Structures are given as structure tokens and as C-alpha cells.
Image 1: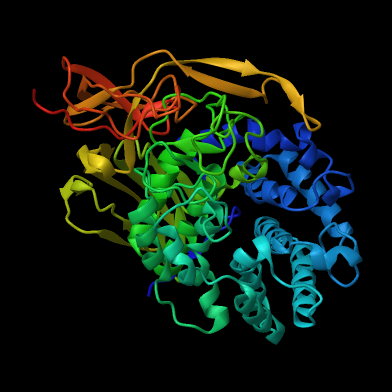
Image 2: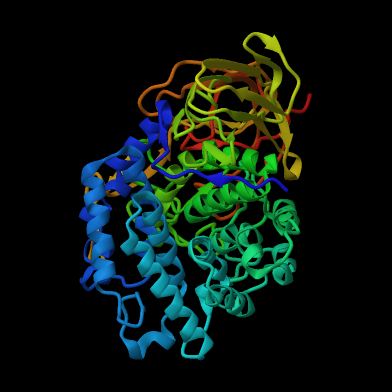
Length: 604
């Protein structure tokens, strides 16, 4: 089984639209959270009196690689200030979380797993030995407390036990000490085995449980990939088995699984939590690196290019907690929410809709995705996800210029100081593949790069728009990694207020999106190919989408879901349609209000 190693921010940097997207994030909520949000600004992790559990580690997990990918010195100083404050407060026995010794047994040690993972990221970005030493002390202390029964796994820690292996694998790479493997075995013995819980995923209920919690499940996909080596077990592709069940009973058109906040079935009006989006991306990145199976890379692209931009505003100053495939409005529910276990504001774009976990955690999505552009194994470099990037190592400099996924042209500029091999993953949907003008027909392109030679390689391919079957007789539209939706025009209504000591003030306030146009249509046909309009500094712009696809549509009778005025029914009452019209479909990630799953029009 092919295994690939990830590069760090020292070797890999974003270019083009990807750098623009990261720059937006740095100017947005993630880059300013320490200034505007009390749970980070005044956290107990740095000596304050606010949240003392997951929010600062969650935020740093994205903020740190963002700072180093962009080379932003101010952000680097902020990251160091937070990390130093955390390390300064680490206890002599290695305990690192902000709680008193007598409180440890009741403290959910998910936070121990998370801060160790985050400090490992900081070590990989900076090489600061103090950080990895602190991780070692924290994990050694964790081992001793679990071994002696002074703490145990419960609740979140029990269901996210494998997250500790991000730190443990790095510690084992550096120094193979027996206690690391023993801790791995203890965690596995106390942690949840999700294969024994999978039957619960087949019939989603309006009930909150850890076993069906969508973020736990998104994290779980990587469990075997990150744990099998330390546990001394063979890799059995558990993720594929469980992913098949999740897709069959809870899949969406954009590669997600519904979960608002627990698994929610196949309806296009159920939501998916933003934390699950970024955690699923991270799982897919590690699954691809561990297995080399291209299906994980393609799922990663689908989630990253559609679901992630859909759930954040263009300026990344606000976000949703839940996104919906068929999302005709984002307005506060006056009564019972349509979501199974989330609140009435979960789909608004805001500072902290529903819960603040996504406020802290969504920032890891784009930076970690950027770090998946290239991977390596020995003297072989893999172009894993073809986004604009530059890789600089002692062996070579490889610069990829591209506007993918909006245009299917990849240009590699290579300066090899030592002989190496470059492998380019070819998407399964690529048609009429060409390398430097010559037609090719491989699923993987291999190039031997001699020492001292500068080289340019141009790869192009085509993609064809197609309908994809969805449940209840509906269909979605896909072209390559992009899902296309019918955009719904809207006006915004801004809300500034204070709740529980948290001020929502422009630009970090809440917004309702109120539709101003129709949404009730059926498919008649698709254009032959998308039209490219050019990229702006906002790659997934909700005002100027970089690419559109014409579709022939007919209006149909489609009521609201019973009991609601801002949610369409799961399916139309009839697909007998009115007069045909041509509308431009937008990428799902650009269409903040949208219809993604529509019926085919029936002939009258």
C-alpha cells in the first residue's frame, strides 16, 4: 500500500487563488478571533477567565498553519504568544490543560488530545523544540493518569480518542519509547469502536448521541489510518466500509454526510455542521496520504471546493453552523427548527450561530488543505491535489500554476537540483487528457526529472457536466469536482446585539439571507460545458462566480415543508412544469442560497 508523507509550511506555499483565499481568511474571523471573541481573547488557556477547554486549541489548529503559509509576521507573533502562554502554564507533572488538579477526573480529556495535536502542528511549522517537549510531557502525563486510573475516557474524549495519535505518531517518529505504544493501547481500549455503532446510522432520529454526532464521525474516518501502526494492526480499509454506510443513509450531493447536529438522513433540507466539513477534509487528507487511494483525494476536492466555501461569507467574517443542499432562506425559525437537534439560528451567517465550536474550528479547513497539494515518498514527489502552489526542497523547486477547479489546465515549472520523479494524480473524470499537446490515457502521470534541468509540463483535460441521481427522484449537477446549484437571489438583514457576554458587532455580527426570487424548478437539460468568467480576489464569490453553467429549467409546483415558510419541501408535489427557461447555474460554494437537488421535468 502506497504511503505518502506530508510536507510542512517550510517547504510548501500557496499561490494564485489559493493564496487569495488564505489571505481572506487571515483578514476575516479566523485571523482576528483573538481580538473580537472573549473565548479566545480572554481564555483560561492564557490566564483569563473564559472557556478552558477546546476553543483556543481549535482556533490555533488553523491559525498557526495559516500564519506560516502566508509568512505573516504579526500572525506568527500572535501564535507564539498563545503557545508560550500555554506552555508557561504546563504543570510540573506534564498536565497542560487549565483546570485544577482536583478537577482532572471530571475534566473531559478531549482537550488534552486536541492541544497535543495543535502543539504538534506548531512544532512542524516552527521546529521549536520547546513545543514538542511539552507535547511529550503532556502525553507522558496522560499515559500515567490513564494507567493509574486517575482519569479515564468519557464523552468527547472517548469518542475522539484517535485524535491523540497525531501527536503520538510524531513522538514515535522522533523517539520510540515503550510508553507511547502503551498509551496507544489504553486509548484504543477505552475509546469507542465505531464499527459496532454503525447500525445506528441507518435510521437517523431526532435524538442527540455521541455515536451519531456528525463531527465525531467526520473525525472517525481517519481512525484506522492514524492508529494502526502504533497499535501494531494491519490496515483493513475500515474507512471505506463505514463511508459506504454513511453515504447510503446520510450522503449529500457535495460529499458530506448530513448532521444537524447528529446524522440526519438523505433529505436535502437537513443540514451539515461546519466543524464536520473541516474535520472530514482533514480525515480525507490523512486517508489519502496513508493509502494512496485516489477516491479519498477526489472526495476531498468535492468537499473543499463546494461545502467549505458555501458555509462562510465571501469575506470569511461570518459562517454558518449548518448548511443545507436545498437552502432557500437563512432566516431565524420562529418556532421549531427544521434541524433535528440544532437551534433556530444554526443556518444564519454569523459570529457564533448555534455553538461556538465552529467559530473556533473552521479555520483549519483551507490551511490544511493547502498542505495537501504535494506529498512525497523517498525521491518521488506526488502532485496530490492540483491547486496553485510552490514546493521548495533541497531536491527541487516545483511551481504549479493553475486555476483548477475552475479551469482544467495545470502548468508545472520544475527546477530539479537532484534526480527525482514527479507523479501527477489524474482525476477519474478527466477526458481528453493531454500532456504538452500529446494525448494521454493514464490515471497517473509519471515524469522522471533529471538533475540540473529546468522543465515545463503543461497538462490539460476536459470535463463534461452530468446529472447525478439523488434520493426521492431528484438529481444534482456535477462537472469535475464542482457541484452546480441554481442560485437564489437574496437580500441581507444585519443583526447587532450582545448575548452571554459576547458582542455581535459589524462586521462580526449575524446576517439573515432573505430570498427575493423563485426557487421552484425542474431540470430540462444542461449546457455542453461551463463558461469561465475569470477569477477575482474572492475565488468563490457570491457576486461574481468564476464559472457558470447554463441549464434549461421549467417552474414546477413545489410547496414549503409542512409547518415552515422558509424551507422548501423535501420534494415537489408534481414535476409537471411550466414554460422552459434558461438559467445560469453557479458553483455550490458560490451560491449562498441555492437549489441543488431538483426533479427532472415531466412531459405534459
